[in-house]
Image (cartoon, rainbow, N blue to C red; front, top):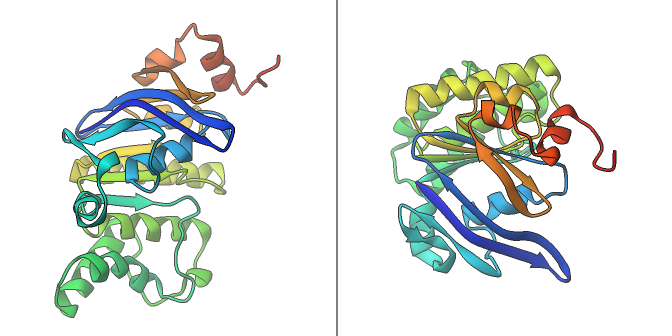
Length: 244
């Protein structure tokens, strides 16, 4: 579904991505892990088309999106759903209007059809009857669910999750992870997730890629990463500081 070749990005004199190669299979849940500040979110923004690389390319179904702009890029993005870090809900909109937002922006549908899809999306994440509440009136875990409903309401082929469980307690982290897994099994979208939740993320991932200092140092099934002999991978999984 997605192929990344030689992706390089620097901001000023600071290199962030140092030549990333990665393939993301269709229908998989691929999780990118790594320490804070290691370039995970920057990498994700290149896949979405929010940033352009200094070198390298990103292909979606063999179409190079790093050279696209305007309507051509928008056509690719219409296949996407995005769960932003922190949820990124509009505080001035009710939860239902937040979920409806991408439908109103991307698709021409009657109001009744939009309302039907919003209700269905909220029901899928266990939030029936929450549409009339504002984000400030619901819990942090519920806001995460609203954000997931918004990402899925357009029935995307590819869904990007940028740290979807940041700020949640361990019980809610587990709940959100299993919600994502359940939705993936039902809809079979291709999922790309950035996360630091170790070891919980190994329970839902098909493939895990470890990003360290701007490079992918290992990629494979969760069991491969857990048994890795790579010292960088093992120290990260065990939560040990780099200098020890």
